[in-house]
Structure formats: structure tokens, C-alpha cells
Image (cartoon, rainbow, N blue to C red; front, side, top):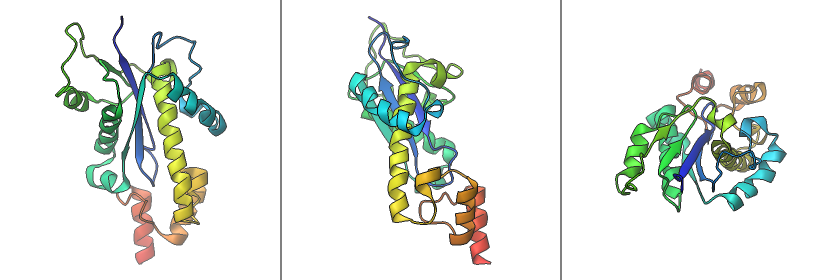
Length: 208
């Protein structure tokens, strides 16, 4: 029997507002087979992601979603906040993974922290593998990307109701022309990342 491998990916790292969300997924063997209909969330239309999200949950042996909120992003920086969200996603898994598969995320510290209180299987190498374009080439990582993206998109749609006028439901917090215009007109709200340059500049503009 092969290792239980958790694929992990994030959504929202480059946004100007809202949390960064990570998801971890363990698929049953064959975890990298074309039998799985999962593609990287960035390659899917929103409706397709929504349709696949319950399939991921149904097929997965285990899955977890972790969040780092806007205040944590501003306090820790986006890289450390993303790693924190990934660690929280790992801790949500009901079945412990024996290896981790990511794309660009370098999670050595978080992986060791996760393993600290979880004895390894004797023959498990506890590998941390970071192949290029894992979100495009691995259904496991692609499944994680779908869960993370759908969870974050739903959250941003909810923020649209709390903070009308910014267009969060449309751009999901990313720096589109619509969003930048709203920032200039309304100034930042509580969900904006004050340490990100366009948000900081908008805040200074409102004060001047």
C-alpha cells in the first residue's frame, strides 16, 4: 500500500482584501490517475469549480481547509500567513498524511511542526515534495486548489453584503480596475490588507 499523500494549495495570496485560504486533500489510490476529473482551479470557470467541489469532498479520504485572516496577513506578512493557513488545513485532516505534495509552497517548517506529535510509519520517508506545476499535473493538488478557491470565493461573496460598493463578489478582492476605483472612492474597509501597497496608498489618499 502506498503512502497517504496530502496535496495542498492556496487561494487569495495575491488579493488586496480578504483572507488567504489553503486546503489539503488526500485522495484514494490511484491519486494521480486521469480517472480524477480535477483540474487546477485557475483553469476552471467558477461554475465548473462549484460543480467539482462536492465531488472532491465525496471522493477524498480526508480534506481540510485552513484560513489566515486579513489581520494575520498584515501582522505576519503574506508568506508566513499562507504557511499558517496551510498548517491549519493539515490539522483539519481526519486522516494523517505521510507525505505532502505542494506546488511552490515551501512548507518544511510547517510539515515538521505537523509531524511533531504524530509518530511516523516505520517505512514512511515523510517526504515533502514540491514539483513544478503540481496544481496542473497532480489531481491531488488540483483537488485542494478547488476546495480552497471555492471556500474563499464564497467568503468574498458574503463580504460583498457586509461591505457594499467594493465589488467583492465580482473580483474576489483582487486588484482589478473596478476594485482600485472603489478603493480610491471609498477608502479601505476592515477586510483590506493595509500592508499591500495599493491599499496603503488608497488609505493615505483618503487622509490627505
